[in-house]
Image (tube, rainbow, N blue to C red):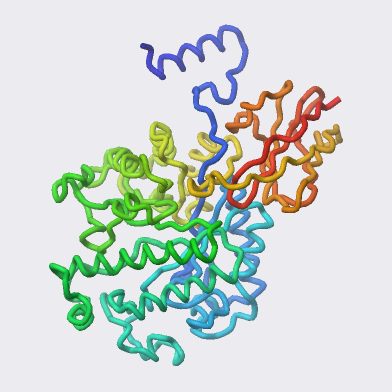
Length: 508
């Protein structure tokens, strides 16, 4: 059987001989209709947004809009925005104080609602907004006296523990677990977010230097050791968060982006062929178990290693995680290390512009993988050695809708829209899509064909030319449209379910 490379070479030779250019997808890859294309926008220590504390409301808002510009330029469809970096809030929370990363002073009102603003502006662009929370971290410094006087950690000093120059809520206290959930669910219930997202920080260590001995003595009966009890505490947080999300907002996504190694094969035969830090042991996070038990809508392991890296090889972790997710209802997205590409402090492999693109190419061989999230926004923007633009040019040629969560896939799809017209204008072909039914679509997906389309032609993105924000009616101009083209539109709801295609319209 000829290899893929042989087939491609044959296609290239044939095209050269006939002087006919290869089609856009001559590498035989069919562009997916749905693919997670996200980036993390970090707020802790002002990594991304706001870029520094004390900016005016107008400056903060302008910065956020610029990050949305980056997302659009890189052809992304989702942003994951950190709104509770250290037991504080980017919204007027009744549970925790305003974040110091907004004004420079914890508890100080920034003069507007950053979360409300960010959600509204993100949706105006047709992008999904995932609210990113750190569940247990209280402060990036270890002095409780520096917390706001009304901070829960000051009112309940028994709730917090120091470790490594930082402060943490004690995950072993049931009242702490409930409080953290309440604080996060406040944002879920009050704002029109698309997802609740945890990062990779749980317990900060697997040693008794994190002194939760009193809580273990009170609540640890029946567990064989401290580690098992701690792991159960994290399990309870994950399982209960799922239950609360399903009860309050079943239409949003609930997921976690853990560190990329569950356990090494040398420790556990079920583990990956790696030799790195193990989340199961070091952070007490049973990431594999959460997937197998169905406690998450998605998992996005941070596979921040290059292909061939000795302790943790990207090309070995991708099939391992794919096998974990296979047969479950947990979607698998991959966390990509945009921050390492072109960083002179990193290994030579990270100085190769194609490294990240190679990751996405490898992902194609694993259908369980539904897309990627890039860390972090600044690296996606700066694109030091062209690694991001290389990946975008080679893998994001077509637009893509965000994935549909398996548990929402069978829900009621949007009503079929009407394509009112497709008319030639000076700037191309203008199409007008009109929603039908009661609910306004979140997006319209616009398809262009050179002939009438069959029903199966809308299952992938080969003919998808644009995804535009929804409304009762939308006008959009295709700069590449021409006489004889056939247009169709598909309505898309917030769960990314799609309607039947509209009537077709031929440009005359």
